[in-house]
Structure formats: structure tokens, C-alpha cells
Length: 427
Image 1 (cartoon, helix red, strand yellow):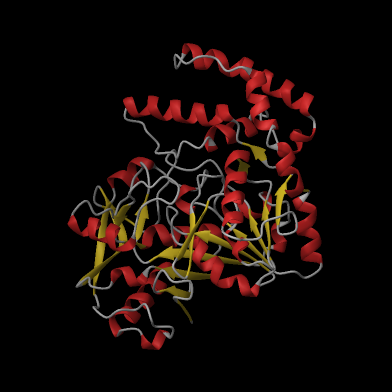
Image 2 (image 1 turned 30 degrees about the vertical axis):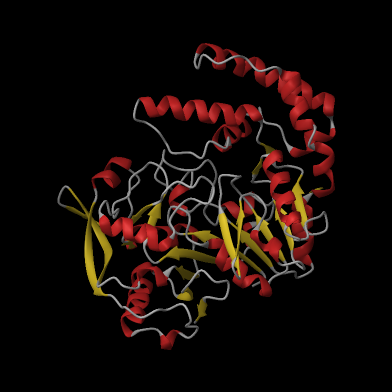
């Protein structure tokens, strides 16, 4: 695996961190290329649970180097909090194994405030997106509008203060007249963020140069995406999406390398489908069966604790995701959660007003109107958690995996069968 990108095939929460953790023995460097503290990646080491938001989950492997690249938006308070918590748990985190791009955008206190106020306003009119309120969207807005602040700006305090003052000259009238909030004092905001500069400085690096040099030295890289394909700003269920490119293509621009240098794409897909927040979800189960999946699968957001919406596997969505990211193989997670279901349903296509759709549509209204057409397969009752050989799976479980493989359009190479770190079948 000279350079591989791991990308979610659904609406996020597919279990990418578990797959990455399992593959860490085969790589040297883990690169997080987009998103911010809105991500939630969970890894279990024995009975211990580790939740990551900004720090790549590869940090649990002491000999690996983790990179937070330029495509990310970084809340300095959250990053330092995460580092501190890892230190408390005796995990090594320093400038030798964690590198922060000097070109990454900073999530400022006003980004989080605007995010929360905007979402509250949309909720009143029924247009709520379902963001985490962590300031991710407003930070990316400032990046595109060329009003943002980058990590490198922390090294020039007076320049930093001038940029904060200029941005608040624009935002304060909005806070006051649109949201009825008190204005923010530029010096106080600048002081708050600059106070983190000294502690962040050991981690700051030109990560694009570091990554390209590593590739020249034949190091093995794993690019870690956050969220999933159907939340991609261009290819997801717009406007109910994240604010960055969470598809495989985002790994190149988000880390400063040529796309020619990323050789393999590994898609991660859950054995059923989940979604957090608002937006269309054709196979959603709004009954006791959906609640049972949520409870068995522990489907509650790592970042917010919000219950995830649950439904049957949607092959229309996954086929589309496989195509958009050019996925070479799939890792299937949480197969064990389906144990005990007498029957399993797979959505093979949609019906919209009598029209058969086999490709995921761009028009949000058509996704909202889509009626899933299901294929039914028998379930199984045997526990899967101790199995490590595909041939040992119950016949019905093997048939289910093989059918998902056929419908998705990519081979399934890894199968998650439990929460434990080693609960993974390799084919």
C-alpha cells in the first residue's frame, strides 16, 4: 500500500477508524486530509475506548507519524484538549509523531458562535442542516471567501490581530442586527487564540513538503477521510452535507500531493445504513426495528452523542459512492450487528413517481421522494465476534456479504465482526 485513501461510502460513521487501526501495521504515515472536530472516530483497545476528532487515530501506534494536513480546519482549543487527554492516557504525542499543517485553516471562536446561531435560526423555519455546531461550515466559508486565518498566521501576532479585527468589522453587524447578539471584541478573540500558539508551535510543519518527501522515500501512507461520500460538498445530498470534499479526490488537494501519487482507494461501508442530522434517507427505518439496530450497533454520534438514524443497506447509494471515489476494494463493518435478524433487506433500486432509478440522483427532491425497492435475504442467529475466517461465517452471513459485494461493484476485502480491535476478517 504505497499510498491508499480510506473513504466512507455512506453518510459517515462507517467505522473508518477501526479499519485504519487494523491496517496501521502495514503503513508508516497517517494523513487526515479534510474536515475538523465535527468528525468522530472511535477505536477500542481491549476494554478502553478512544474517541478522536482531530488527531488521526493512527496516533495509538507509537511508531507511526500522523499528519493533520492543509485541507483540515483546526480548532486549536479542541486539538490541544485531545492531545492533553492522550497524554493523560500515556499515549505519545509530540512533534515527532504529530504534524500540523501551517496551511490549515483555524476555527475561530466566532465560527462556532455563527454556526450555532445559524442552525438555531434555520430550525425555527424547518431548514435545519443538523451540524455539530463546531464552526466547521463558517470556517470553510471564510476560507473560500479569503477571509480566513491559517495556522501560519499564529507566528505573526500583530498581523493576526489585524485580520481578526477586519473580520469582526464584517461579522459584528450580523451578530447585532440579524441575531440580536452582543458584538465581539477583536482583542479578546485574538488573545484567546494566540494563547494557544506556543503550545501548538512544536507540531506546526510544512506538511505538503513532508508528505511528498515521504513518498519519494517510498514510505507507505494512509489517507484518513472524515464523514462520507454522501456528505461531500459536491457529490453528497446537498445542502445536507459537510463543507469539504470527503471523497477520495479530496485527499490530493487536502494534503498537497498530485493525485497520481495516491494509488489505491479503500471504501468503508456499514452492513446497514445510518445517518446523523437532517437530510433524505430512503431506507430509513422509523419503527422498532430501526431502534433495535440503533441499540445493538451503539449508533450514537461520537462527537455529539446524537442518536443516528438507522435503515437497511442502500446499494444505490453505495454503487454511486464506489464510482465517485474510484474504489478498488471495500471494508464492510458491523456485520455482527445484524445477528438475530430473521430477514435482511437490501435496497437494489428506487422508484420515483413510477420511474425506476438505479443511479443516485442529484435532485434532492427526487431522493426525498424515492421509494426503496428491496430484495430480502435470510438472516442468521450465530455470534460472529470470535470468527476470523470468512469460510467460518454462517452460510447466510456469507451469502449476505457476497450479495453486497455484487451490488456494490467492488470486492469486499475486510469484514468487521465486533467492536474489538482484532475483530476483523481479511479475505
